[in-house]
Image 1 (cartoon, rainbow, N blue to C red):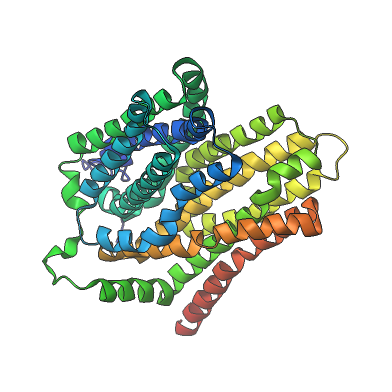
Image 2: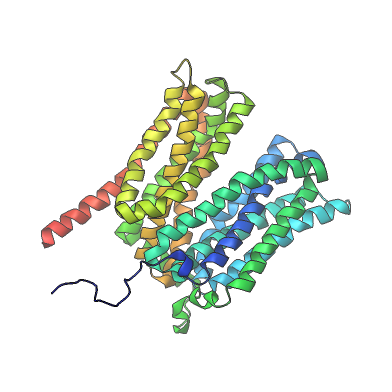
Length: 428
């Protein structure tokens, strides 16, 4: 029987993100949060340096305080997000982050600002940002539907990277005009606006962001922990995706530990050239986020993920190769920066879409918590190992090791796809 469209009936249009209630408002909130993050990344260290005369060790502890929450609080946060309304939790996270940031200029104006307060604020902002990001990741499939998750993640990356291009450029002039501590007024206000946007615009979407299993009996922390761990480790697709992401992050941490030193000592880059390379990170991410929806529609999530994993190590190859060039090394490294970050956005967006399809809504928070621990937990250690390897082996060999580690990230995916294909062949 023909499947031709019946006369007089409108053609069925594919689902669009703009038609999903609450998604546009969520993106506005994401934009305000990204503006705050971009300003904070520049101004927070400058507050410590200019206002408190902090040394290098203190700056290191300050940055560590912001990221330590991922290692120790990601799993409890994931368990919590599977029990509560996620949008409301995101609201409180942004409110807490904004309030903590605003305490810095307040204390500075009263002459009470000290280094311990700055460390505590960095920790609170990092923890709140982690909860916010996990909440958004858990709520997104319920808001847009699982058929649009990859496109929605890419759109979120577009907003994030666009703000990442603009907001750091605003921070420098603000620091020069109103001082570093008072620049945090702008960052804190942006967080409060992100919270207000959620409060105002997602009242109806908040219901869809609540876990559907609220009527089921509440289980204890230990049982909830065990369920999340078993689900993450036993689900073959999730295990492959998490393993691949962990290897990619380990390679990035290993290489990034000495990348700037490599630029200066081996390639002879000036600070201006290094700044240009870093600015291309956001440009590459923006390009990738804009391309992902069309590529997913044309290739599908699985094939696009495979291409991203295949070409990612090829983009890293450009870094050590630049050390063998007599001219044009800056152009090659810029090409690496754009290509690598475009591929990373494509990789993360498709991986997130596949993870969301494989994960029940009642397990989204815990899956994200364990995924963060497995993929981000080894990063500090690999950064230390990368630095030690740079001293022992040389800077350019470390870049080649980065290439090799990144190439290994495709092995868990290849193993999973091979096993899946074999099972399908045997069942046919």
